[in-house]
Amino acid sequence: EAQVTQNPRYLITVTGKKLTVTCSQNMNHEYMSWYRQDPGLGLRQIYYSMNVEVTDKGDVPEGYKVSRKEKRNFPLILESPSPNQTSLYFCASSFTLGTAQETQYFGPGTRLLVL
Amino acid sequence: SQKIEQNSEALNIQEGKTATLTCNYTNYSPAYLQWYRQDPGRGPVFLLLIRENEKEKRKERLKVTFDTTLKQSLFHITASQPADSATYLCALDRATPLVFGKGTRLSVIA
Image 1: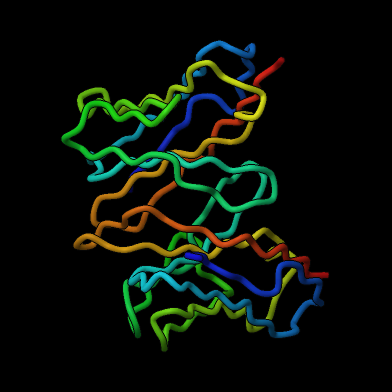
Image 2 (image 1 turned 90 degrees about the horizontal axis):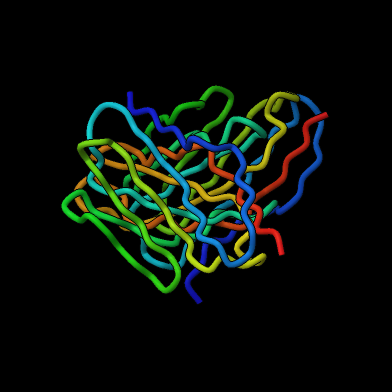
């Protein structure tokens, strides 16, 4: 089954404790992306990757890191989480046509609470 | 930068009626305009994609129009049902990362 998986689905942590949210897709998509979703603010892009070893900042990259060592995986790293990073996080992937993104497939989401 | 407005935060309609949601954008015309459905706590799910050279696209009870002169897309759900209640997002792209609107929360009342 074609899908994007994220782990963990729920996470409670404390300020400053490094964490990683994993994302994996089995569709051989070039493009992968991380979003956070907050009430009233909609989906905001954190980082994206057009292909292996190619990553770039989205609209709200501060406090986050990513890597793309393999095509299927795109982990999101919070080196020192803070309470303002409490949010619902989504990973997404798609094929690309030139630099335009085709249909995005989203993961199920990771709900993060930073105390 | 590209800005997107979905002109209603929430829309309530009676079952059986046609729901019409609006997506307006500024600046350049996107190569693609996409519509997604999102249920609470879940990831958005793709519904329809319309290209800049297409005026209209249909899928079952769904219809999307794209007017590059008005810089607007309309999303219609005909014969709406309570199961259509969800948040609907539009998204635009042209040689940049996909940009999402904040969504319109649709409630279909039986």
